[in-house]
Figure (cartoon, rainbow, N blue to C red):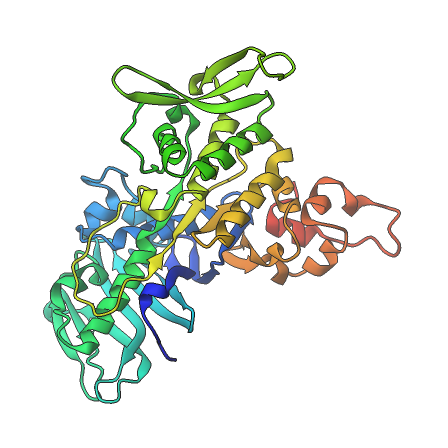
Length: 464
């Protein structure tokens, strides 16, 4: 392993999520590509995967763990089910982790971060490790090392953290608090005066940046139908301030705004001439569309329809399209500022946009358009996407190459679609959506004995 060049030319992202013991999962690895589609039956654990990302996001904060996970004094409220609900049934501990991959023009390198927490009698860190590239003190060669490894301190008080010095022999030991993550404490306890410490601070920065850039987007059309101050231009997780975000794009990125306007025309059932905004005397605005009446010729009358009369589907689609078109700096990520010393510039961490049941509110005919929108955004490199779906129409829109990035939650496991038993035989009948929706499984005209796809369909939740 070798780390070369300035990190200013690099980008970082979460490439794997590890659910070591988290809710209904044990020893499960979830690979995350630039675009990952997650499917499976109800209650199979799809939402739990998004919850794990939320937990890791919150651990980057210097907050007390109870505040971070259970929502005390936190605007976003608790993580779903709270800290206690993150532990598997019958346990008071949960553990999870991730791999953060930094992509550089001259090669890639990985950081591994893992943490175990206990929820009773209070929420605390039991163990935590950070692994990644570090230069040897003498030779300067890069080696993959356990940079920090923390466990219970003497007498069960706090954490005893072993910190790599880049030298042979014993590591340096420091005492840290156990009521917040080690990751969040490193910038305050490492001065960065040695090359080894600077490499650890770089690792902390890269991992924390990637985790903080997860954006669980849950657009709520009902919240988009109210007036919003024009100044609120960072997109919130509910999409409630969609109007000022779009207005900001109209001023600062007119090309992006024009693409969103064209998308609105394509999916709306009524003829739309333009995206507009209604405003109040106090400077609050609401999204609106200018609808055409007549045959759409110049001079024909139009009517302004505000968000209060727009469909849920159109508002939700616009919100998702806007999130995919918005740089991470314009998303409300609850970012935390860390102080550290480093002689290497900061890599860019693109947002990981997570959307549950992305097809909700949309007509099946728009599934392909939505999927293309997600793929296009991820190919531009500014965002990764993790979406969950139950939609056969959306699955049908996936290309053969994209099917490799479909993950199926089943029986407390997560498996790539293409690795499922019976996949090849089932897919010989057509695309996944076709197999499910057009009844090809029952085609008696097929030569040979009728194939049995029941196990395969049960795994993906399409047997009912």
